[in-house]
Image (cartoon, rainbow, N blue to C red):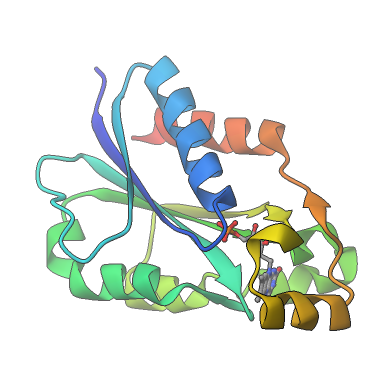
Length: 163
Ligand SMILES: Cc1cc2nc3c(=O)[nH]c(=O)nc-3n(C[C@H](O)[C@H](O)[C@H](O)COP(=O)(O)O)c2cc1C
């Protein structure tokens, strides 16, 4: 039987939201009822069987509002299946594989999910403020869309089955 699922996400430039929408659409195809929301302090999570929480990664960490959400809602999350995903760039660089595996640690330390995954996102200089654009250029961060939609779909199918 289909379950009720909340996919929520924290983003700065939008790519985490796009991935959240895609995960939701795959889960709907798999028979679940899914809502997608941007993370906010007062989201009502009552009545959901599972929560999928995504965060963009900045400077090696999940966004503060995603960590805060898990920290504040531990009691409400107790009887739900919880899944995390992170969206970053370094996953496209094989020499950064170890570093990337630490990106979700701050959320995992607050509350252990059933499963978690990291996806590649996008870098669009036009969406960044001038100082951050400068910083990214200094770091030689490559602009582009690196989302692997097949990987997103497979993960969404996998979690759909495990709920
Ligand atoms: C200021 C800044 C810092 C970032 N830091 C990291 C990082 O430490 N590791 C990484 O893999 N990607 C990093 N990224 C890349 C973002 O995680 C990537 O662009 C992601 O798709 C952003 O998600 P969003 O579009 O939902 O905000 C950084 C991007 C910016 C703009």
